[in-house]
Length: 402
Ligand code: PMT
Image 1 (cartoon, helix red, strand yellow):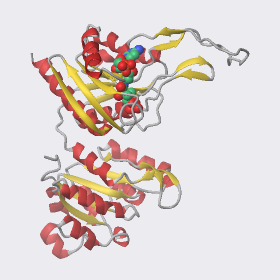
Image 2 (cartoon, rainbow, N blue to C red):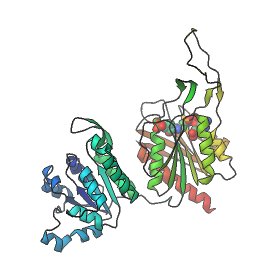
Image 3 (tube, rainbow, N blue to C red):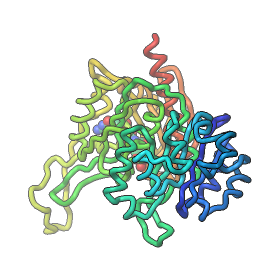
Image 4 (cartoon, helix red, strand yellow):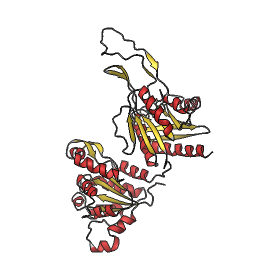
């Protein structure tokens, strides 16, 4: 059953072109079992007619603060009390600024001010409006007050420009809202996640690296946050925005990652080693750029230190989860790694295929732990991350209760 079943959601729609996508979002929330009441600002009605949302949500659309009939039936206070969550999609720059100031001149602003439930914004605006310091200060201030942000996403915009400012797609928003209602199984616990590739320098301009995008590790960090954990994300160089609630530590080489992770691990309850750490690094880094004087060039490589094995050997070791990237013999290699490195769990994924593994939006995992195993079939990395975090927290609790 979906986590949205029987959840009461106020869906606030403000005046932006992305309001057309909110029609599909309404439909998806309803399909997932949520009860949705749409509240529109006056500007929003210029983009989509209230009747559309009424038909999609199966409830009357709320528009005016000073509608006496509404106020006596389901006014702003009753609406705020009815909801389990207030989701505003799209949230324009203007609405975000008003929300920061606590303005309650329109029904939606008044509901937000009266709401004692979480408020989630899905910003949508031109990329320059989003990056403007005024908007950035507004979102930073709202985040500090506990307002959650979903997006914005990067890409082509209705105005013809391209950049960060698009409203997240309805499917992603619906999934993220569903995650919001996830059980807080890791409440009060801390999780350390490593993500992305490492870069091993050859000379001042060249390095050895791999195809890791960081997507799997970043999704795990987000899923752990959704489960209530305090998360530290140690990341190699990637092109992803980190989850806002995570503490981010950027590193470059396998040696940097070793120092940071082994230093932080004893202060965390769980370590998840998702990073694709280089197994070998150049024995020496050339001081100047290597010139192409010879037909062939030999670079001597030496082994890097194994972060995962070092964490598992710490006197105060966290619950330690390793990944295994394999092209074959997934199950047997995963179990061998579990036992040889003394780990609590190994999540193995098949790599070198068109779907899943490195730099893909999807993944499938074969998860093994002492006394158990489970296959997580191909799904988005965010979904896989949610399932893996559930499995980790079950096993973590079981281990700590014995
Ligand atoms: O980043 P994405 O594009 O989303 O791709 C995700 C992923 C494929 C990188 C991820 O799902 C994954 O499989 N990560 C582990 C990749 C890897 O290096 O696998 P491995 O079998 O070589 O290493 C096994 C484990 O040892 C890993 O947990 C790794 O973090 C760890 N390790 C490896 C070398 C080293 N020096 N220290 C380590 O801790």
